[in-house]
Image (cartoon, rainbow, N blue to C red; front, side, top):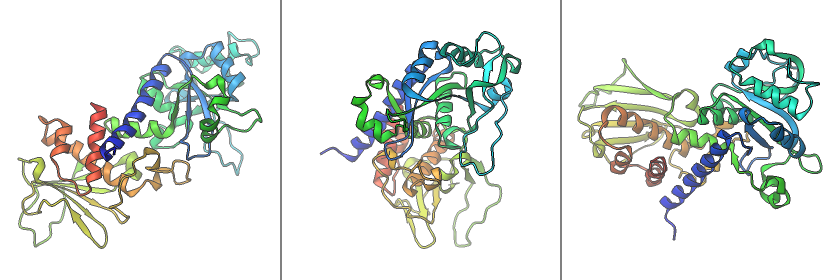
Length: 383
C-alpha cells in the first residue's frame, strides 16, 4: 500500500515536473497548452512567449487553435506602450482587461497576416518601442494582466503573467483559445478525453492554472505574505509569563488562502520540540501537546470553519478556481496548512537560521499528522 506521504510527494512532484517542462519550452518560445483543471468547464489556450511570435507559431495558432489571438501584458509594459483599456458597454460580464487593438505602425501590410501579427507582437517586447510605433484599431488584441497574477485573478491572462515571471522574461505572451471542429470552445474535459483525436496538439505539453498557482505558493518565498511585530497586545491575567514579542500575519494577496495567525515568542532559545501549535474556533481549542507553560514559541491559528478537516490529496481539490468566489472558497484545511507553513518559514528565517527547513518540519509536533506529511513532501520537492 502506498503511504500518504508518497501520495502527497507524487502529486507535488508531478505538478513540479509539469511546470518545469512547460517553462523550459516557454523560455524557448515554443508553444504550450494552458488550461483549467479538468474539474472546470472552461477553455484551453495555445500559448507561447512573445519572443516566440514567429510567423510559423502565429499561423499554427490561427490555423489549429482558431480562437482570438491575444497578448497578455503586464500593466507596466502596457503603460509603456501606451495601450489604454478598451471601453466597455454597460452590462458586460467579462472581467478580461482588453486594451485597444493594435497593429505595428511600420513594417506590416494590412496587419492581418500571420507575419504581420507576428511582427506586431515581437515589437511589444522591443525595449525601444513606444506608443508611436503602434496604431489602433488593429488586428492584435493586448490584455492587461492583474499585477498579483493568479493570486489576484484566476484567469488565463494572469497565468501567462505568472509564466513570464517564473521564466524571468518580459511580461508578454501570446494566447489563443482552442476551438473544436464544431466551433465550440475546447474544455479541459474535452481535451483529456479527445487528446488522441487532436493530433496537432499531441506533442504539446499541458499545464493547468491550478499547477501554476500552487507551484508559486509552495515552491516560492511569498512576496505578499509577512509577519509584523505587534507593539500592543493584551495578555490574560492568569498567564504566568509574558511574551517577548508577538507577530501578526499580514497575508496580503494570500488573505483568502490563510487564516488569522499569531506567533508569540517567549524565549530567544527556541527548540522545535518546544514550539506550541494551537488552533481555536468559537467553541473549541486544540494543540499539539506542547503546554503553554513550557513552550518557547507558539503559533496560534484562529478559524471559524471546519479547521480540523484533512488536507485533500489532490491539489485540484484545494479550491475551485471555476467558482465565482475563486480563492475565497479555499478549503479550511489548506488555509491551516499554509498558515503553518508561512509561520514556520518566518521562524526558520529569524530564529533557526542554522537549521535546514526540512529538519525543522521533521522535529515539530503537528496537530494533524497529514499537515506534517504534506510539508515534508513540499520540502522534498523544493530541495
